[in-house]
Length: 379
Image 1 (cartoon, rainbow, N blue to C red):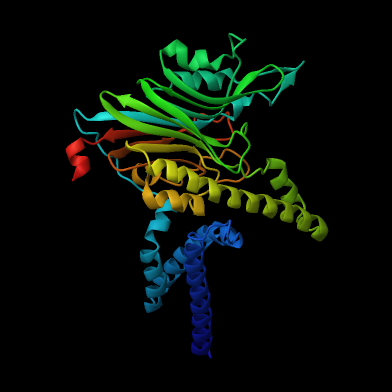
Image 2: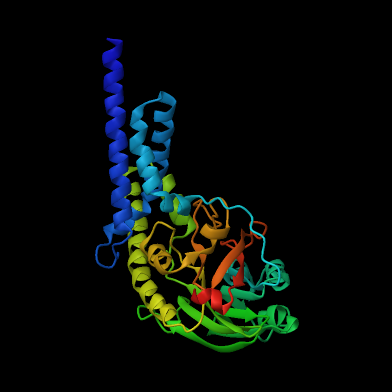
């Protein structure tokens, strides 16, 4: 009787493990499907981390059982290794070669420096601590999304406080917004000269939309690197939307309403970003120089957006970071939606997520890039 029970239990666990592996395969396939053509693929891909974790737990279970059935989750683990690396990365520290030409890049969605979190008598209260942290960071290039500056204010003139005061070059892709005529948008600051620059406006956004890409060709001691600061379509999900969904659990009518609202917003984001990433890649692949593409992509590593970028570019966190690398400072933990990608001709070192700066709804990220000599780049 005991042997029969063990046999049934093993068969049940094997069936469940098989279903998880099939889930993994389906999730990987859905990463290749543009949500603009079949939007449910975006949700299946979004669920892939759950399948990866469950497969790992099955592997651990069969190892403890000393069963040959560990071959199934182990094979899936090996075949899906690149996707596990997107989930959690492990890298050993690399020494930057002596005499190497380097470029440190910091990317940060500043959340307009919290200008609209508190309004007293119509005057925005900006987080000066955040501004000072950015201004004093040792990076060579700063890619700032949701940038905010008030030209008519000495205290909140961030073009001056972050750029001019420190002798930085800048390219601003901003619009004038709000009643006090503040500049809002994307700004690239650089310690090295900017020789050319421009804005890529996505065809599915309005001209004044914050969702765009700014680029700058930067002269790094005689070599040119093109740096992109990107802000793709937001998920448009607020913390109260998530809290309302949690609180609605137990109330079937309310839960359906809130969950449908979340699903609708996610679907809209999947579809919009799928189109935007194709326009971005078209511009990136036409660059005559090595590129660094960084910013707020508003998509996790298990998305069509990320996969399309990872197909042609390396990811700095995967190559030089450690851990989960979560960048969203909000009610949903473990989300890495800010990234730095880079092309041949560069190598990433010392990737870091700056959890010490927690004043925005995003954490800043930085990496140091070594520019490879031209002859090495051509080999």
